Length: 202
Image (tube, rainbow, N blue to C red; front, side, top):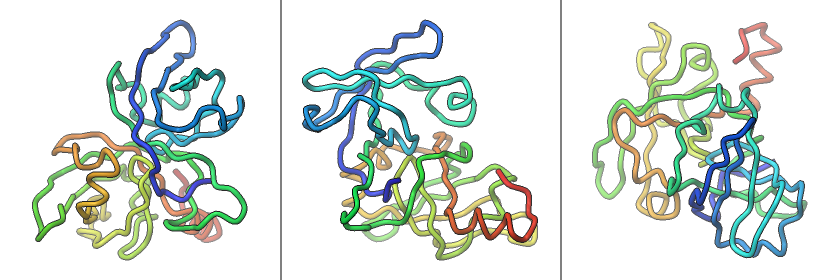
């Protein structure tokens, strides 16, 4: 489990494309404290560490994960948000995030709003019922609050979030532009409430 509070920005050093691709990710984490088999959220995707070096770790990605996330677009030098798994007793600064991405959204627009940036993001239709004003959502692994959902009467696929300067600096979200693809994970509570009400699940 994770909290959506990014603690490092990693960089793809190399991609080994034989079979299920392996990604070597540079990090500022002390890799001596990372166990083989540990989970690390990479742009919001929970991945398993299969090897490590002094300043990097390696993960392997299945075809299923590639089909549901933006990872297939990663290239050498791509910067990604990193978060290590939550430990018992850690501060829960964001919201409970599983690292199981539900789908890919796209940035519709961004514009300055005072010192922040207001992003409008279009979600896949199947996710729209689970996104609510003042609810939580993880975008590329970052815990954010939904400011508004547009056009609820027509499906409400476009929602807005504000990115403050600190979040722009501490994550990769500041580099997003209109058309950028992003990993979306809906709030876990919304997922289970939807299940109880018999709504279609992502």
